[in-house]
Image 1: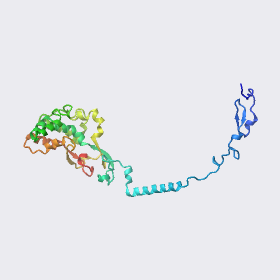
Image 2: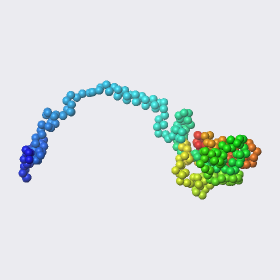
Image 3: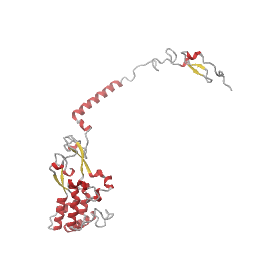
Image 4: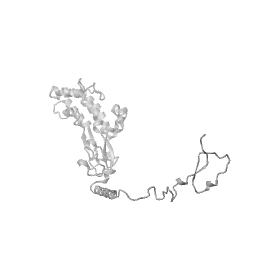
Length: 306
């Protein structure tokens, strides 16, 4: 059908040329075809014994001194960095504000953390105390006290709006911080019980029990999904300091300055009104909201972080 090849009959013995050193290829019918002219034999037309280029030599020689100079500069910069810097910062853990554990000089005149080799976690007091603080300051009993000691109607309206005790733009409804407290006795009983689980190490194990005074706050799935906001990353000399053998620093809680409750809280704390209800609230704040923070030798931060 137009092909010029003729196939050898079946059973024909292979040619002795198959054992010859000259490379051969098979044609379309299984016959041999001479390919010696296309091989890369030394001395032949396609000789590659010296590589694909016949005239080989160096190119772009100017790049060699540039490469050497770059390596020298890399070594110089490394030496200067090790002399003026602190290579420990390459592997030391960092606290909540970016300070390096076990490093004395931290950026932006940060905390001296020499000897504080371990990254650990301490209570974020603001987050833990937030619901108890709001339950206290926004209770019916505290509202009556605030109405007596606030000097203007505008200040009273602002307080009631911040606590959502009256309809206003910032409120979608009344707050629920664990139940209203309608008397000084109720505040003393409930708040003292809730805060004891936060301030007394012996009662800490009760904190996450559903039956505890804080059960509805810290035993829920929502708490564990947001657990990182309840702790601070700080550098300590040990992951488990023995708090019972240390002399604590007293720290009395106060809302952060950017909180709307900061001025309401301090209005009660700083009040000089000759009123038994005011005095009762002040006593609860001073006693129940006071923590024993780790000493500076163990936790060299503000006591609210220790």
